[in-house]
Length: 290
Length: 290
Image 1: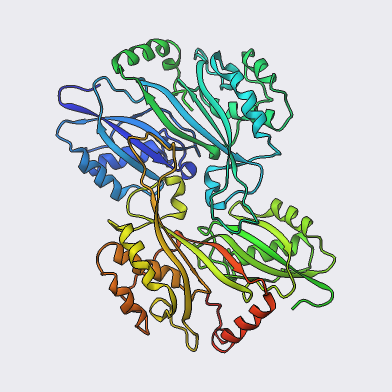
Image 2: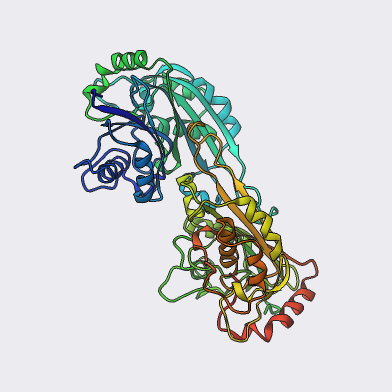
């Protein structure tokens, strides 16, 4: 909570997930939150680590280019100093894109109205320079079949079949966008006669995601794309109340949190999010965003 | 040399350089050549490692998307089997893009008429997912100043100022292309209001490069781009016969061998390359391509 002597800041962050044990601080492990809180405390001489709240708690190996976090700091702290000093000490796989004064009522988690993720995968060898962000999976994959089947998942559903069960936590979410496309290999990379494979990018956007939900959704779409299940299987999954063992949770390295959207009317949104979530999720020990 | 019972194959290769100690086999180190020769020997049960010759011997940390190598194998070996088996055993940072029967007279090194490299650098934090291929350097850098000054380096020159001196080796080369451009950050990566920095890509193409020549050329251009030397300094460097300490050899992780070009009339070209080079470079213990 911000008091009269504190100011809330919004941090826009990007990181490569490979060498992090996910977002959330864990003793003895290199995490995004732990690294940031440590260095913010150091460069501002706070006498201890800072305390960050993020929009989507990413798992180990998951990347982010559009992660958002908030942070309350004593009113006298100068944000330009913070950005400059962090730029000197942070490792190359973790970038603070910007630190801006948060508007009234801003909360990185509860004021968010949507999260957009991209999952990248390939069934052929792709550009090794992009391999950290593209999961190598079994194929062949029919991208058009995925893109045609995906809209069945859109809208307000109970996504229990795609979520790790957590006692008392709701799995009802609104999937706002899902599409699959083929991304060609980079132009001019080696001889044109010997093309490197491109990759498949699956974009999903929802108000929020349960734990491992994106990777389970992509796993189901991948299964349809390989022809092992028909598109109608997705409807069956949406009608299921527990996660079936037939859904593959795809590898973490293909997943990137690309962007988080916020409401214009922040205070209303925070109230609404808290109402919807306090009863179920906040009783759980972990945040449930993927 | 190919005999009546052997067939020469052309391999098109791509690799991420970070975890390799360069191309050339070195005892006890993980190298691209060593890894490939080992696995080709294994999957074809040759009873020992194969023997590869490449177009450009890349240094430790340097990447490639268009490396070319040749390999002589017993006539009975099936190349489709080789590609399939290598795809199963090679690590994700090393890809055989294709194995094709080499035309008569083909030699990956001596039949090459040009090599194209790209050097990527940034003076601001860039997309951490692309950080393995973009060198972080001091700025601010004026890309337009680099692009305007670069043509002074074009043509046939003695590039001694840009080459690690090697007794008896020629440093005369023809620089066929050099340009600098700003590559924007990937679209849709995070919120548009908080852009990630793009990077500067410097493309150079020459008949061949001396050892560390690309990274020295880029170092000189970077110095001009930061305003610490005028464009005319490049002319002075071309008139110098030893490498001055003022030229920065840029970090390896920004460099990628993108493509190698071959003559249509291969036999003539091999003869010509050997004539030009045998006297000087082949007496040296190392190949001198960067």
